[in-house]
Length: 506
Image (cartoon, rainbow, N blue to C red; front, top):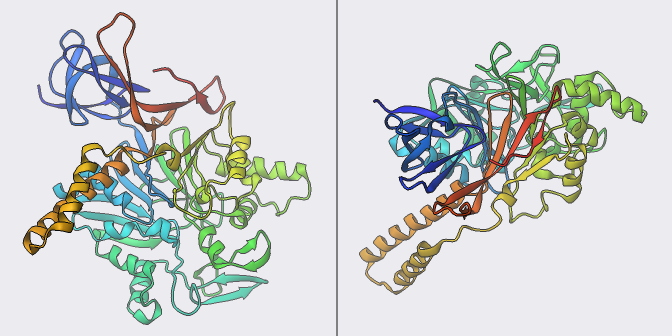
């Protein structure tokens, strides 16, 4: 029998050794290679580097939609793998955690590896800098690189601008690949600024039919925009809800500046580039996931007003509720990636419009913002859907560094030998061993803990993260062991209602 690929069934599945001991714990949708025919209801399999046995009814043929919110520290980074095995990256954090995760998962050394798209939500380094390692990796290509059109440059922060109708606008957007190449042809415009140089690197990583371009929402909410290849006619759709550009007198697009408070205060460059984050709503069959970039209160009020046609601020509690209900048609989602790492710069009206059953927050340990903020966590729970709205955090899912064990001891010994060694050749060899060991330790921490996994068939969903220490047990009177590696939460439809958290014991 030829090897056959199957997938672990909902919500999780077990792998056993020949004695009936559980040796692996799989999430719904995990890839499983079936090595032969069933014997006594058990199939020989290979999964996660292990050979074992699985119950035949613990496998399914359908591949799921998968999102992995990688623990990139203080920043955002999400991998999307579609049911037809297309791969997209939405932001990549600031350091190299996304690179390490993808290298571990897809084995770049065995390349080349193609990604269908990279979406850089906005030019903040904790969202884009992690792409540098990816755009300089020879064994990776991208078919599309999308961004929000705002380009940091010398002089004025975003280039040419105008004021029209009392509103300040950015008028020098980089809409196309030709615009980008023209911009990059004059180094004096950007010098050593990181973001333009990153997009320059991206040009070298494109496939033969590749492109780099601005992506934005349609000014008309009734004519929605989609990421190429994921349009309204498909089961899996990637709707673009922001940024919303306006059209200048010359026919080119422009984006308005945002102020430091909704509708008042001073114009703010940070609020502007964050507020115009690429806002993507992933829609698969009847399920939806909102990826919120770094939206802030000023941007949220603008979006609420544009999508509902109602003015901000509302004049009464009743008019605010009317706006919220109208906005849900566009923004309501079963699962949400929290805007701006759990910042307090949000509106309760937008959270009510999103009305999600589960929220994922991507934040880091060593930062000065205290993300996620306590009031934000309270508001997410208050305005969430169901009897127990779920809140996940990459920071909390990896509450401590993995026990390095013997590798940590080996690293200490290597460092001591390097300090004592005077022979240049031997010292160079030891430094190479040190770097390889550090790389392995970092990779294990990044790829094992902290990531929030989302799996869905478009009708129900599972969210899970790996336990830092597996639970091992056994049933009374049994000599076989059980193994639990994942903390798992399920979203299911109850009656005719929307998806909500439903406890699962499996």
